[in-house]
Length: 110
Length: 114
Image 1 (cartoon, rainbow over the protein chains, first blue to last red):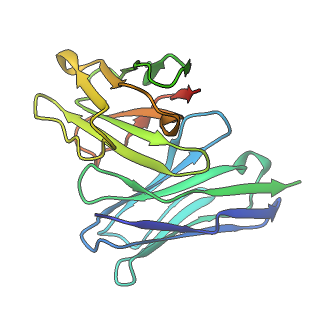
Image 2 (spheres, helix red, strand yellow):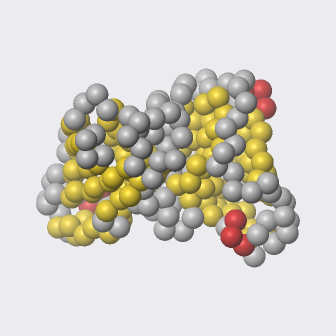
Image 3 (tube, each protein chain N blue to C red):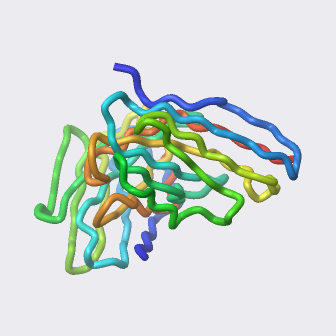
């Protein structure tokens, strides 16, 4: 089955700086890669996703890049704000069964 | 519209007891998923329902776990003879069609087995 590894496990950034989270996956057939944000005590919420037919997608301060050859994808958050503090999960699938990374706890320091 | 809802929000039980967790998906969503989130871990796939098709139970960790979905809507996850290692947050999600659609998560049920 699919195995997704996520790094780093924790990330502390100064407000206004950028944050980058990286994930690798094992199944070359995977073609859908969503990112979820989970605030403390809340449900995971989709923040951005990318499909294998594109290499990059951007939505305001958030962008995701995908390298299918190397089997890795990354989340980039620019101009970080305190409300960006949360746990971020990457996931991968080629059907319906999402395989999740272990998560990255992002703390934005004011 | 209303999102995915789950009940109860918290459940404390004694080892060996059975528990039932409920999920109400978004109206009109044909796909429903159960995941388990252990402390500090990612989400672990448990089971998938799609319309009237046979469910994919490949993620259920043991035969003590079962789930059903009645009428293509509400789903119940049942854990029999609970063990301490079953303690986790159980999350339900639904999507409009297949898993390639956005999966919307419920708030979860935090299960604690004493």
